[in-house]
Amino acid sequence: MDKLTLHEDPRSGNCYKIRLTAAMLGLPLERVQYDIVRGDTRTPDFLARVNANGRIPVLQVGEGDSARFLPESNAACWYLAEGSALVPGDRFARADMLRWMFFEQYSHEPNIATLRFWLYFIGEANLGEYQRSQLLPKRIAGEDALALMDRHLVTRDWFAGGAASLADIALYAYTHVAEAGGFALRDHAHVCAWLDRVAALPHYVAMD
Amino acid sequence: MDKLTLHEDPRSGNCYKIRLTAAMLGLPLERVQYDIVRGDTRTPDFLARVNANGRIPVLQVGEGDSARFLPESNAACWYLAEGSALVPGDRFARADMLRWMFFEQYSHEPNIATLRFWLYFIGEANLGEYQRSQLLPKRIAGEDALALMDRHLVTRDWFAGGAASLADIALYAYTHVAEAGGFALRDHAHVCAWLDRVAALPHYVAMD
Image: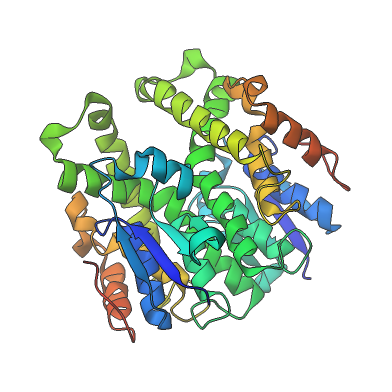
């Protein structure tokens, strides 16, 4: 595989997903760090060269003129893991893994990750009026996402395909730090047991 | 492939993606229809049997006791199309296709589809206070998504891999009806030309 470089903010769970996937696969990953609060990913150079969407993470594959850039955390995880044991071999299970990864980006991250960012990194006192108006709806939607995960795990150890997969990595990233967003993980016993299973996987690395 | 049944609301672009993918692949799809405004997807039977998340679309694979249910529109499209010409053969291009599908669910659908649903199906006069507070942020974010797509298409006919793929189908679904959400597509000439290319693809079917 070409040289891999992760453009990241180490506080971001979306970036951590890619680091965790690479670690579990034994793939070396160079890291280039940005401060999203300071606006490092909105500079003209970043927008022109790395990601026109102004967001991290971006996985860079190759170097120099032949470098290619892959935004969207779950797409980057897929690129690294396709064909490995982290992607189920069965067609339905593979699609079911993607189902949980789309759930993560649609129903989980915009609520749980956003409240963590606002409350833990920005601080409630510094939020604007529009952000304040979203605290309760995001709290409810985030709780719904955790409750759905908890019900799914009543009869299963892993989200899709009967083994640890990218679905678990994607959902682990912001779930295991959800308390920084004001979510009470102890209310979700099956989620807590699953978090412990993920952290016990071979080659697991912790978030910075 | 086992019998395929789509649990859908025909007004939903997320459901249409799956119909369009199946049509382009020549796969027969039985359709079961629900009215999301009336709450058809929040009944105890739907939550227990079809999708605990209370959302459509859900792709049902097989029948009776062996039926399996796959929520999340883009995961269902992947299940149908994996191994076909709608998924690029190159590893990076395949991940890049998924990149645009995750972009669609994170940055496009929550803005463009939601404004279409609120303004066209619910009606602005019937919106609650919280929804009203979201009109402007969703307008700005939706315009940003269309502008990003337009820039990407300046030098390309298709979103990923140099040919029509699931990325185009996923983004087409709500882009081509974005004017019902108050977005001016004529401001995005490259997007308009691409919409015409998608509609000219073999076996294309229109939204109901």
